[in-house]
Each structure stands twice: as structure tokens, then as C-alpha cells.
Image (cartoon, rainbow, N blue to C red; front, side):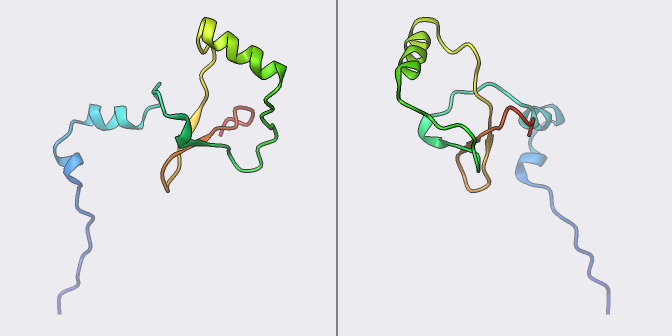
Amino acid sequence: MAKEIKMPLPSAADLFSTQEERDNESRESVREIPLEEISDFPNHPFKVKMDESMADMAESVKQYGVLVPALVREKPEGGYEMRDQGCGK
């Protein structure tokens, strides 16, 4: 009896895209993501307080826009998780 060899088949995206397109998909990029799709990372050390400081920040964003974008990563189950900018994960 012949030995069965299991080879992973390429996906349709791999067959009908260029290497440059596949490389670009894995690069970090700037995108607008709806806030409801973003959650905190586990054991987040900071808590959001709706206080005067938050009101000042909201006013600043209205006036000047976002000066430092947030970093998120896609979650396997869908949505995005806020990245811990302190540890570089």
C-alpha cells in the first residue's frame, strides 16, 4: 500500500495574489476601526475615568485631532485588542 503524503494546498488568495500583496497584508498599517470593536488587553493597569482630565482630552481631540494613534492587534475570535505600549507586545 502506498504511503499517503499530506501537503497543504495553497489558498486561493495565495494563488491569485502577488508576493508584494501578501507581504503588505502582514505589515502594520494605519486604519480607522470602530471603537466598539476594540477591547482592553487582559490585566490592563489603567482605568478610564470620566473626569475633568478626560473632558480636557476629548476637547483637545475635537480641536486638534488624534496626535498619538492607539495601537491594537487583531484577536483570533474577531475584533481588536488594545496593545500594551509599555512592553512592546
